[in-house]
Length: 126
Image (tube, rainbow, N blue to C red; front, side, top):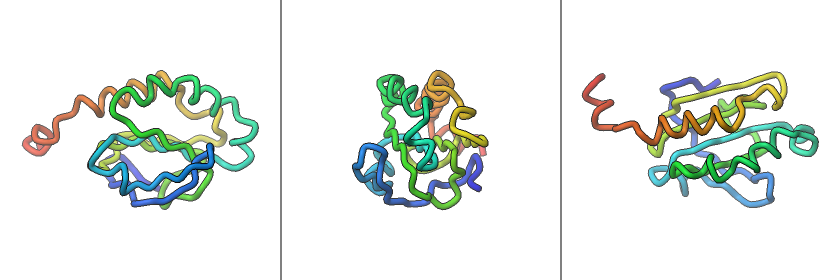
């Protein structure tokens, strides 16, 4: 399973709305909020509805929101990965069911944090 500090693997998945999401189109352009859930949870999950309702806040921080039922190497299912535009993971969460994943307000807080990070400053601190 991926952890904080790891890099997001490049992926090509089908989103819940039937579109395609290719990480190479997001990488170095936007931060990433990747939500992976099972097929059953996609059709019956109130979590997906909460994400949809929170979409404006979740994408306000120069973020690509990708919700999929496809497998992404190292990403738990159900699970969430938040990464900066260079692919460094800042947050990973998983739960036995999608209902146990962090709510959109908490995710927005993490996205705000990632948006405010300075890669040059982070490099100097290491």
